[in-house]
Image (cartoon, rainbow, N blue to C red; front, side, top):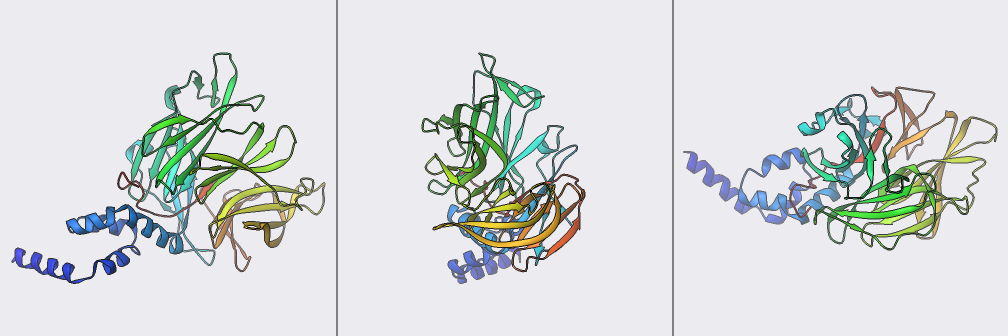
Length: 381
């Protein structure tokens, strides 16, 4: 009887065109796909194929973009938020994590790309990076490159042999040409901002390499930052020109490039809030003050980088924004938190420009956009 039922399943499976099966699978959630990998050898091969990873990620980016919040205080806790018309579809969902992440190590979120999160941690003077796909609960630990520096976790700095303190800036992204995740680390002198070294980690090769083509300019580097289409972006201020700009690192070409702010930007009447990705393009959110002496903003401006340069998308008039930080943006929703409204976040519908207040557990959350994916399922991802 059991053999007869198995035969029926095989005949049904063989009678359905493979392209149709793949198309159906591409629209399913990750948890369902993991279960379906056990159905048959052909299902396993189809779902673990690197091309299917890219197809499923494309569908997820169209229909399942979420936000992930890092909840501080104790073991690493991540919560996912899903919105529809800037309304929460459900209460925040705590994501299951590998047991190692539930230890007493202190983790800090670095970035999010293609369904994978990157963290940094430093237990017992050993500096690690964690690459995690929460959807399949797969974690890889990466040791920082071997340097002639001593690391001091209490202050988060290295000290070189000449007793100069060294800080780090970390970027995380995806090389679409080689289909691999990469990490870039900039080692710079804490006082002078002079760059000592830049190294890039390749997940596929599981190795670090030193870059030689690094900028000669000196930069003060700020959070927040974002990855867009295989490039990582920081807000920076040139030590030489004292001018605010954006620094890009291309993970495919492994090169840096400086991008100017919008021409009309006046640092006396506005300040940057957040870089983000909207519809696959770099976006910039500015808080604008009508009164130069005011401590609260009067409006928010959204700019997007087009082929022709920066283009202003909209202006939202919302007064009394004290110290806002834009947590994250996707194609439909922008999340904001403010110093004057602890324990709450604001969601803004990017079509209607309407705001909604949401009460959350965390007082000072860190949020990133997140798309559930099959990344890290196989070595080729």
